[in-house]
Structures are given as structure tokens and as C-alpha cells.
Image 1 (cartoon, one colour):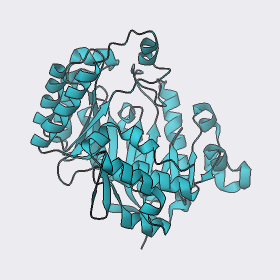
Image 2: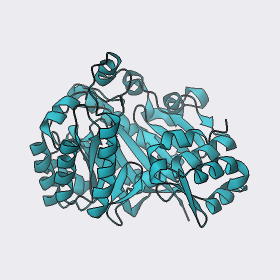
Image 3: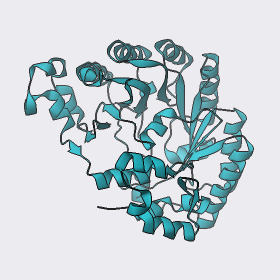
Image 4: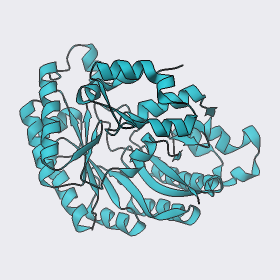
Amino acid sequence: MKHNLELYLHIPFCAAKCNYCDFLSFTSDSETKESYVRQLIMELGAVAKECEPYSVSSIFIGGGTPSILPSKDIALIMDCIFKNYDVIPDAEITIECNPASALREKFETYRATGINRLSIGLQSADNNELKILGRIHTAEDFLKSYEAARKAGFENINVDLIDCIPMQSIKTWKKSLRQVTMLKPEHISVYNLIVEDGTPFGDLYKKGQLLLPDEDEQARIDDFTLEFMEKQGYARYEISNFARQGFECRHNKGYWTGTPYIGFGIGAASFFNDMRWSNTSSIKEYLELDLKNSDKYISEDNPISILRGEISKLKVEEEMEEFMFLGLRMTEGISEDDFRLRFGRTLISVFGKQLINFTSNGLMAHSGSRYYLTKRGMELANQVMSEFLLT
């Protein structure tokens, strides 16, 4: 029986850079986009032989804004995947969409190519907040896109939201959350705004000019989110993710539970055969690689080796850390049995001190063979997880 493998495809292009974004994304001309798609298809073909012992259980096309590409390009990419990889019949296949670039005809093409899940980046249902974020769409654009996606037959849709936006209040946040849940998407991701260096928000923050909600308002926003989402039938299964029963994102759950994955395109990360690497982040270098003839090269001269750069094998201690970091993001937490089966050691023998400390102070709880973060622990997740460092 083949093991599962996940594929991630990075489309770095955007119509405009948002004020909060530090992702590897940028605007570009149509010629560069066409060249990138051709190279991405070459990379998929060049790597396919490595993946023959695996079945692809999920595919995620992210960015950037993948929906900015012509629908024919997405069709070419999907055709390449199905021709070269063993994709299981019920694989979850997601594409990220911006409401300003995803039109009905694109959704129909996506469905025809095998894509069965959409992730629509709304971020806020308040047009003033969208302007503050630097988004180029309106709330009305989103509603049109969502309706078009349903008419095209999509039955698994995620909507992305960001809370604690500059100038946001509990009142405007309630408006966004209520408007989105009224549409009954299968999945909703709610991300706390993170102010990153090198972004317009980061620059304003350093100058003391970024008017973020204060701690009390942030707490009210977080508390309302948890209570309201539960009432609307959405279960929180991960720190930032809520889903109706049976619609948890399989691709992300695979990532959090250690399923191997390969990333394609610039900057894409991979975890495969116990090795980790990240593709070059330079689009110039990426487009210049002779991926079509990669099988004619050996060792360090192979374009795939150049693309991946430094490949590292995690130490056992690092694997244990990741087991905790990723597993504790999920509300179900981590399993003592899974830890023992994977590492041949008991969870208590490695992390006993931390587990005892966090369960005694209420940041973690223990049920059966599982340890998980409490509500308070979720709020302090970064602080809690930093205590599980071994290296």
C-alpha cells in the first residue's frame, strides 16, 4: 500500500501587495507569468519519478493569488499533475482565490480540472477595513464570487478572515463574522493580524502610527469569535481554523500530523523522505534552470539540486519538537501512543516537566492518551510551544 503525499504549488503573483503581507508574492507582467507556469509544469514533470511510491492525497495551489492566472494555465497545471502523479480518487484539491480575480468562468474551469475546494480571501466584510488592509476587492465583490462558486458546483468553500485589524472594533468584527456565517461556507479561517517587519504595517508600527485594537478589545474579539462560531455550527479544530463536521482542511491536517509534502515553485518548502528543503526564492534563478533536461545532469549540477539548495535531515530531537509544535496547534492535541510509536520513547520521558507544569497551571489538559491546549493555552500558544524546545 502506498503512503500518502501532499503537493503544494506556489503561485507568487498578485495584482497588488497588501499592507500586512510578507509572503513571497509580487506583481508581474503576463510574459513572466506564462514563463513561470511553463517552468512549474517542467518542475512537476522532473520530480514525478521521486513520487512514484506515493499516492497524492491532497493538492493545494496557494500564493500569492493563484486565481490571477488565466484559467487555461490552471488547467495545464492540473493536467500535468494527473498525468504524472498517482492522485487518489477523493483527493482534496484546493485553490486560493481573490474575489477580485476569480470569475464564474474560472470556477467552472477549476471544477472541470478536478479542483474541489476553494479558499477565498475575504479578510473583512467591511469595506473601510479592506482599504486599510490594502485589499483591491470590496465586500460586494466577494459576495458575487461566492455566489458564482456555488453556481459552479463547489460544495467545499473556505473563507479567510483577519481579526484585530487597525481601527477594528468588536462591532465591525461581529458584522464580518455574521455576514460570512450567513452564507454557510464549510470552513472559515480566522487569523489574528501579525505585524511583520518590512511591510507597510510594520513601518507604521515602528513609528507608533498603527492604531491596533487594545488588549481588551482584542480579548473581546477573540471571545466573541469562539462563542459565536460554536453557536453557528463551526467546530474549532485548530488555533485559527473552524469547520462544519467533515470539512476540516485535509491538506493542513496532513501538515500538522507529519504527512510528507513536496512544494513546487519559488520559495516552496518540502518535507519528504525525512528531508527538508525550500526552493530558491529568486524567480530569475528559477526561470533560468534547465528543468526540462534535469535527468541528464548528475549530483550538484542537477537543476533540481540547485533549485532545492541546502537539504537537511532533521535530528530526532528536532522531529520531537515539531511533533509537539504542530500537533498542539490542533484542538485534539497530541497522542502519547503516536509519540511512542514514532520515536520509541514515552512522551513523559521526554517532555514530562513541561506537561506537568502546563497541566497544573491550566494551559494544557490531559484526557486518555491525549494532551491538548486549553482555551487559555491556545491564547498563549507561542509561549507554551517555546517551552518544548530540545535543541
